[in-house]
Length: 237
Image (cartoon, rainbow, N blue to C red; front, side, top):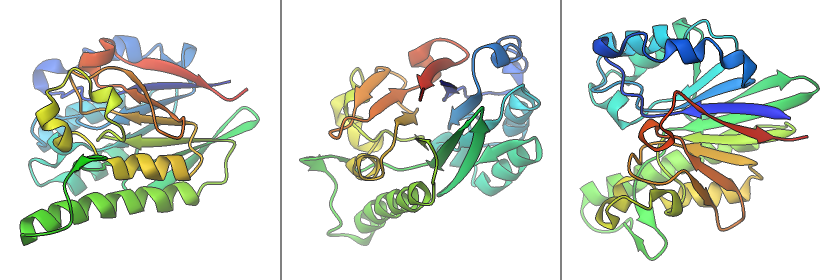
């Protein structure tokens, strides 16, 4: 059994320094890897990212992250990713990582994702260039996730995103903002690529559990939803 710990949307700043650390220091007894589903900062500032980097550094398990929309707000996403990487946190954006857990190989493919909506109620690649740019970014991020998942040859596969791949884990959010919380293209990729678990954040008022049309378990690990330092899930034998 591979034990997965995950959390997103911690939105750390100077006043939150050290708040998660007591629980995180005990992580080795609960999990084999920690996944961070984006929005580690409040406004995408480097001083906030430094707090996050120090909070999640030097843990007893590998830490793998994607960035979220808040982490992009300050137009310093590349610098934030480098800062996290310098603290031993692997940041994914259209790529993948393999981790050996006992006699099993765990593959994690990650991408921020984007909005756009879900089947029957989604944006289309038509009209003004601004709308086409929006939808093209959604499609391009989903394609990057497909490429990353296809690169994996592992016993267990996880898709890690910030935006949601299904509407079910958004229940509790106003339906009017679903198109800004996720997109169906991510879900299609997840079903196509034989994923065992999909993990996302972003939906603070959503619910934790859902399933793709193809039967893949999806978990919304936004901290306001799981209400703890991390949630844990078991995969494999």
